[in-house]
Amino acid sequence: MTVEVEVTIKLKRGVTDPEGENTKKALNLLGFKNVHSVKSMKTFRIAIDADEGGSDVKYEVEEMCKKLLANPVIHDYKISVVR
Image (tube, rainbow, N blue to C red; front, side, top):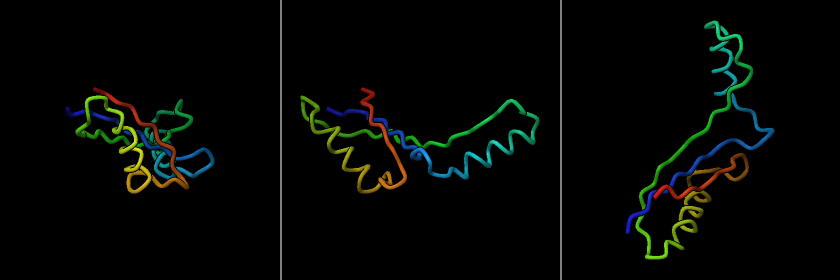
């Protein structure tokens, strides 16, 4: 059985977000003066084979986050099973 998992990665509170800050500045320069902040995030959709119970999927994706997808020093991440 194939399961689709969504991983959303964002910077931890207090970590500078230069991409978000530059996007906010650009939006303000384009006339969108009502924009007060922009935060950047990254989302991965992963299709992964799972056993019947699907119990190993979250653990395996958690390991993917720890080893490659996220830097635990600066990132928080959320794992959601889509289907």
